[in-house]
Image (tube, rainbow, N blue to C red):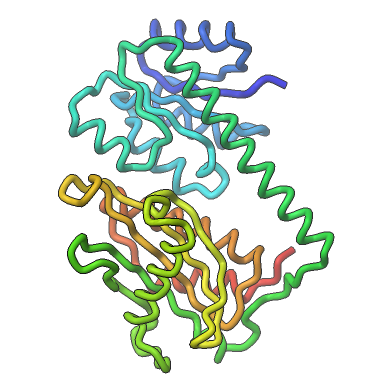
Length: 296
């Protein structure tokens, strides 16, 4: 079965040549001339595209706003996304990558570079989906507990959402948490510091710059936590990127809940990368809802 690509480009000649090249390489291609039309196409598709290639400077809706709309939609947010653009300044390239796109290819481009990027992104995404499907199948066959982790209002009040940042001199730093009035035997700052360093030691310091999550038990407060790492571009930081950590602590978190929480954290880190405000209480409420809703 051919992979389906959505190509968004306002220049009709470029769009025609891209479509021709990709179809010749055995891809099925659908096209749009701007982000707004592309969103309309996505909303009507029965089968979602395996990958999106988009220009940046377009009428009606540019590529940045189009990518933002795609990344904030839970049905579309996992589709690999490539910018293909004539915007070549270092600032433009940094901004494009900071948004979280899978690749940023500059026009004029080599055909083999574009095709290699498309093939690699589709393969990686398929492998990731295959692994998740197998894990879900395994957990289902083992009859893993899928009832809500939180059954009472008192337990909901014990759910904590934390955000940790990084300082090259001081190390992990607590940036925010909710609810602010929570009382624990150990301070939130200490717990956040221990979680950051503990997960970093599991993955290795270099790997915490990659978007990934882990479900673990926090023995000293008799709770479970789902910890998610990502990074943002920062030219002033060591390695020109700065790790960020989001974590939720609750009496219990099951595997299926952790998958849904990961999607919420991906939405948050996307906003952080775009330097957009995110209201911690509203995301705490989203996660609390996940933990108190049966998995079907």
